[in-house]
Image (cartoon, rainbow, N blue to C red):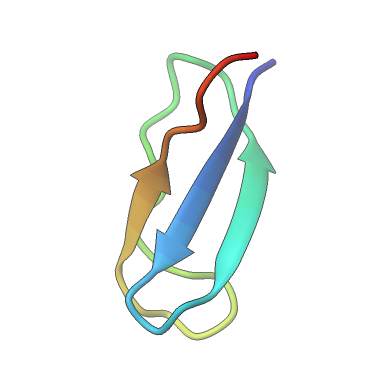
Amino acid sequence: MPVYGYRCSRGHHFEVQQRITEAPLSQCPECGAPVTRVFYPVG
């Protein structure tokens, strides 16, 4: 299962192991703020 990085609008960063078929997260588990998925370069 891939690991996806997320960042919330309040500056929290976290990673979550999710299936490719799962919907992306929408809220930060720490503060509830909206999140965006962070893409990391390969290599």
